[in-house]
Image (cartoon, rainbow, N blue to C red):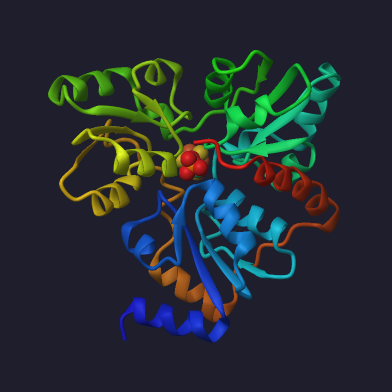
Length: 302
Ligand code: 13P
Ligand code: SF4
């Protein structure tokens, strides 16, 4: 029996669903019940009637699913699939920042630990960061941990944004020169970039979108060619869902090694051995859930 068949059998046996981020390996995406961006995956985690959620993404995504679904078993196939940006802020450091700005609200990008979410007023994703910030009553916002997303939000709000200094090492490898080169070679292409990109790359974009936002935009646009400024894994769906359109990655260096750790074999192992179960201490979970619930209530932005 091949690996996909084995996964189907195990899913049935355990009443499991497989949630997969848009940056995962192509064969892992093809084994999914749902493939999406961080916002869509959080929504699906809540809506599912499954007993078991296998989360193929990185640590903070599985942890968010566990925060939102304490009664379900959330499995992470590869525990080493950790997001380096999420590790760039700790709850202790955030507490100190809050003391410096007592009137500010705290917005945390979903790429954070549950403990950091528990210290925040509301979460956001790349799809709704501007919408979330503008929905708040406070005039000052501490925005953690992604500096680039914070700067992007700052250019779309009247509020004072206090950025943290984190960044995504993968999106930082997309350079303005890469985009310029692709533009020279494909002058009719539209440039779609993720807001985790550096500001000088964002400045070259026609549209700044989450991964699901890029998929939606590319499907609806009259353009036939697109330059894509995000992690390479998104090209799998862009190409598959848009026959006849062409997609050029801004740079082949835009690979997130952490996102690529999950395999069909590790999904099988997770379901067979019931590992690794993600659990969040109840006092942290309850507070983190408030921040995630508020984000889901705010809705998707793009
Ligand atoms: P989205 O898919 O939500 O745009 O997130 C990108 C990302 O970097 C997730 O780690
Ligand atoms: Fe983290 Fe960047 Fe990888 Fe997303 S692409 S998981 S933000 S390192």
